[in-house]
Image 1: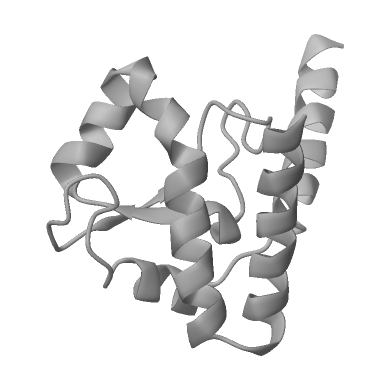
Image 2: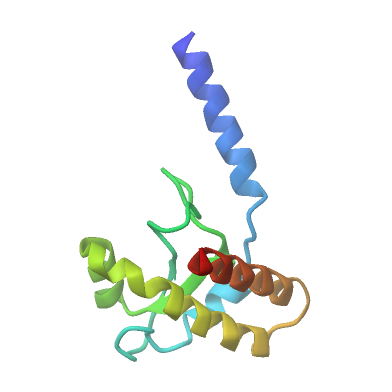
Length: 123
């Protein structure tokens, strides 16, 4: 019985993950930007963690919630909880640049991500 419940939960999690915005083109572009924390390049596309419930155990946030962090800063963010508070500011900056760069579905996803961040920060 436990095994069947675990399999059902895994399928539901995968279904939810499939409906999240994914864009290899956007992530490739994010990796071309300088690090939000220190300005160094090249960068990883860091997906927001630990805030607003955008990710979960084993679930990565939508690609519209990605920001550039160099490898050193990326590792530090995952090591040092105090760095999490910087993510909304870094994400707003990345989204603003992305909205100038992209149209269509990516632009719409970025608009929705920005509205989501602003709503959570206002609360």
